[in-house]
Length: 588
Image (cartoon, rainbow, N blue to C red):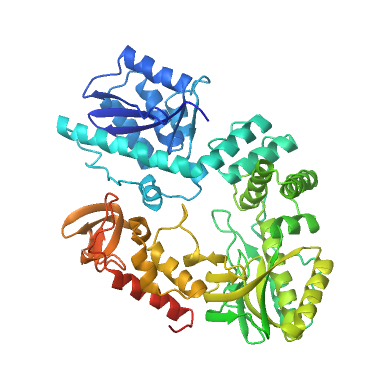
């Protein structure tokens, strides 16, 4: 995408500020008015020209900045703009509500998009910046309700420009997703640049079905309907099935499904292994386990390919308000995606993956035309019961299942039963119509079902939870700690050797949000704090009650990235790594 410009606004009672920064030129333009001033004709022409001739983007611009800018363009002074800003924030207004209430309209000639929904997680720009290890994290320097002097205004401009840099960092992380949305926008003749995965799914399915809105009437409660292929052998699991069939699934005031108390307290036990059912998926209850493949045993992971889409299609499930024509549209999308995956058409594969995954998420949103909580229950409960069928059959034949999670299981198999294991899996596929994908592991280390590390025979790894790479939805917790554990488990490399060989400060950083803001040695740090452990460190505290911020003993705040300090406390990181190894049930 060319001619990209990032923008952001700041509003105080006596200040309206808008800043632009070109991604290629790195040129910054700031336009501001103070006290009772209004935007000049030249400034108005400049703002309009940028939006018409460049592709502008920002963070939360749809709900805040765009309405504020359009209001300012009506030659409102900062006090008037501040009152609108205050109203937007206090009422948590959506952009369309503000536009409607102020009789504002976004010019069709303006080119802009918002990256907030693309990012997915509901986090602040500062938190995204910290997760991305942006160079500098600056908190809003002054209470947004006070009037500013000139020195303070200069500091707010510095703050706003730094926010532009944080937004650019976030854009760079999302660049592939945004470019994919640009290509999808052309294909579907719909502007999808600012949409989340779920929003894109709804837009495309609406377009394919040629509908705008539908009348949705959901019952306050409903029951699960069992597909014919779900059958258990044991009385124990048949009684569980009867319990599920008798349950009334109830919607709360927000239209979301509540986990029935009968399931909340139900722990399933198969051959001394415990499992929990839930609204989202099946979870085993193991803790601190380690297994190795050797000349007697093999570890095999079996995941169901496209599990939830397959359940929808195999069971002919569709939102009642859309009718059976939904299935034809949905099947076409799934088949197109599978073909694209097979032919290595990455763009089509990834775009249709967005539609498939996003559409399932919309089943639980009462504001969506796809809203169908009973269908969501049909999918998730069916998925869990099918896995329990497989687990029952394996355990019945002396094959140990060591973990189960939503769409797959991990088994520990004596080598003389590997063929039997594969036969049982094949029979299950034939009975259910689903497809299993298998991976063999050299070792499997699990703190619990949501935090594990699997080592493949080529020494590559698959991890979850603490063993995954930093993402936009996950706060860094000293990545080097987990890197050192992985190096120890895969290559038998000493923990301290890995720690001391690393010179990247980003690997040592911990990030945490602190409600009401944090302080360190009485220095205010803000609501998003990041630190390393240091021999010169001290505890970080909450400003509001002076309570200790969790795991911050020995913390040394990092407001701006720098070289790794010589006072880094390696022993603290080693201690954390050893604790993880201990939680895996291992000893050094």
